[in-house]
Length: 126
Image: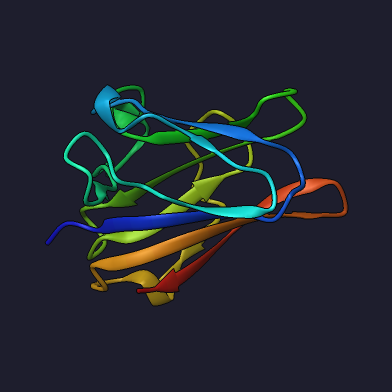
């Protein structure tokens, strides 16, 4: 069961860019203080990549980075944990930020906020 990402809300006030490592056709600009529908190459949605541990991260994640370099987040789903969404507040693998309520829910949106100057990813089912 794959996770589908329909939209990214950017509440940081800084424009950003989504980089899908698995599918470059899904790359897109993320507007500041707005919602960007992640249409991907076929204009419908993008899949969140499966990544069960750090050995696979380099080829299986999505990164969103502020255009000015002020923040970066990465995210993926752990296919060994019922497709639980994980995110990191840097361009790298971490198990620090799991989203347990995302397990086995296929359709979602993500919102990026700044909390005390650091980025945070908020997950919502679609």
